[in-house]
Length: 252
Length: 252
DNA sequence: ACATAGCATTTCGTATACCAGACACGCAGC
DNA sequence: GCTGCGTGTCTGGTATACGAAATGCTATGT
Figure 1 (cartoon, rainbow over the protein chains, first blue to last red):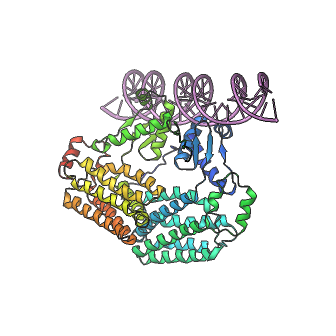
Figure 2: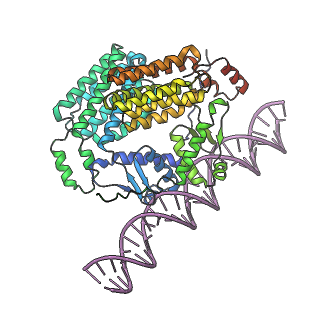
Figure 3: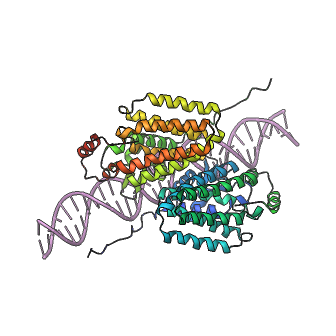
């Protein structure tokens, strides 16, 4: 009989102020949905310092991290601004995502257990129940969750890390509702086909389907994502943007 | 006659101490070839502070960046260590690289001009002249340069950024010489085929070739990259490692 | 009224001082 | 000889103070 394994927690490590601030700010930035409001959003170190109850030092280090992730932009002696990605950047990110996820899907076809693949069906069903028209937020989250699940099955940490960073910025197109031309339904069918290919262990096919699925989104944004660049113009009045949205702008 | 354009430099922006330190340290870490020496390499904030002539603050911020890039590891109240990637991590990185580059190659087939593709031949030729056995360093650099060139042709900045970060860590396997089983020659043939596919604008084929080429490297490391994990054990004496290298260890 | 020079303010960048955890060493007790 | 405890030192984490650049305001002169 082997001796009982003693596994202990790493204790805290990582609970430093810097990391706490980093997580908080990241979450806050993601939640605040900058893409709903035109005009630049500016952060103030001192204000944050008072707000979070820590000195500027850990805050600056956290902001340094967020800058590298592309969430904020530090302009010396000018201010710290939350970054808004351009349409082109978003499309490039989706393309990179497509590359990484299709590779992950190929790996998943080799490595995932049958049980693992079963969990995809669970996610798929819960996804199916969502009415995409209302609750875009939850629909989008569930969608991302599905993709994350597949990538997890690849058992390649790097792919997870890299795509996670990309997914963060996908909040920009969350509003690209599926209403338009049955994108929701088609998307669902494609998800289903991918799972089936995985079940058949057809890595080649699964990879191709995953790539085409995500590249499809890229093309969709290419066609209907112009609003992303409008928002960059601070001159645009909020009302104008809202009107444009009401016109039934697409999305994901 | 149009008025003379007045274009001024952004002046300094980015010349902050933090960024300078960041670049210096990054360069230093990459150059020092940690994979040649077993045992952990530790950095000392105060020492660096004296060495570079700036205070600890910008140094810490630079180190924060390097940590996120995976070059160093900050252990609270323990020390700062240069990170050595494990064999598994290296392989995962190569896989991610394969994913991104194959996608880039597909894009290049659509977007690159004939002239652009011509430059690939230039790189290819200068690469061909290198004797891989001696001068592993330069051979490896030229190899990376070729891949970077292709990715550049995709005109997708994100792909460049992401792969650049991955390439940094490829220095770990630089020593995996090509001597073994004609890898150098085969690699060259594959490069040539990729360029030809690009010339024919066969994106599908170019993508596949690029992927298989790089995944081939991953498989190669899988077979011959065990030394990467040996190095992590500080107990291993340097002499032992060097002996192992002399045995004709593979690489890239 | 308007342009401008000077000053005050704001904001980030950097330096410095202090804090607390982790380790190493040495001594005491068994 | 081993174990446990305590102290001193080293190290990174945090707070605070200072500095310089950019901006905005105001007063002044025309």
